Image (cartoon, rainbow, N blue to C red; front, side, top):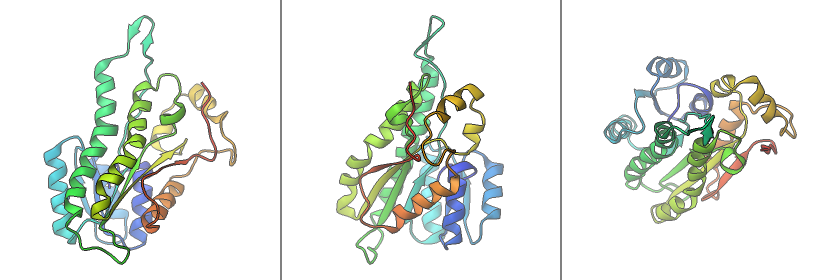
Length: 245
């Protein structure tokens, strides 16, 4: 599980740990990661890992398989926000920023899932004929991104777009792949959004008229993991929210 030190990742780790899952927790925030591990019930592995680094991720996958025997699911929650217009005050969008957002949100997620899938294909099939499940995190910004979200929206749209091809690639091995596109959730990321930006997003809230709770995201992950007939789809989890321009 990536992004496990905080936000949606930590909430998901808490729910799955409560249900008896043994987790490999990955994050760049070593201190936060260790706090999360120590707070969870059960036995878990916490590894400070750069998800964009193939060697570090491969080591984490191998460590998890060695500790727990096999890897049965991946939940990718690691991600970073971005706020930069294509051209602002006559200056073009910084290309290094673009590359960083895409590298972490998109390439990092794919790096983790590809190496985990490589290990999963050797699992024995379960009662449903499955060997593993992959859940990635997209965003409703993939479909109706706000101003200044070109890089972020592109990275999250790619997460949504790769869901079906990956599900098709891995079907022969009994591995499912889904994505969740959350709306505005109460996490550390939204706490850093300027008030004007939050007000703009809140105008699109339908019912309930509030931000989502991390526990609600975790419940969606749990549903995907438990329901073996869910596959190849990106699900919006947003209370009907649509962002206006």
